Image (cartoon, one colour):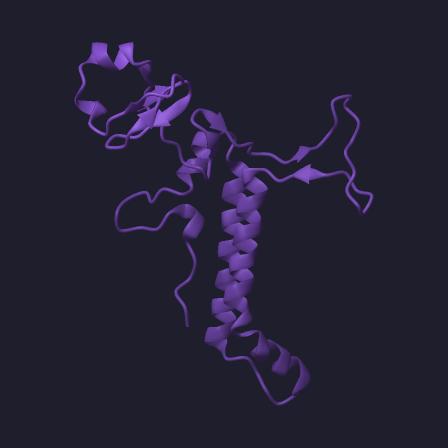
Length: 176
């Protein structure tokens, strides 16, 4: 991309320099020397990055939770009196898996409640099997997440091992 005094100059658009000179929309057709003489500088576009795992190109998000402190190293406290904690990628992934399990289980929760409240009602065995499979899947995902020791291992959880399989972070039982 071309810059003029830190401002991005868009192809096909005119621009005004610091002397008040308006340059034409066809400035891209100028030679490199003409662009340089006009004060334009080429800068490569920022490297692409996956914002799920990186803050910016080459700046990884933390895997582990971080207790927040001020510049003097004193704990930063929230309105509830507890230290502020920035969740790491692992905690976020585990929370997502638990929320997903909760969502899957909520569809059959009424059956479990009914069985607890109505003595002559039993939850169908296929529902019990499904619910157990959801809890197992959630536990397996949590185990995989906790076992990842670096960002590369963690990112691998989001990649299917082959085109016909799901990513390890997304292995759930088939719906009822």
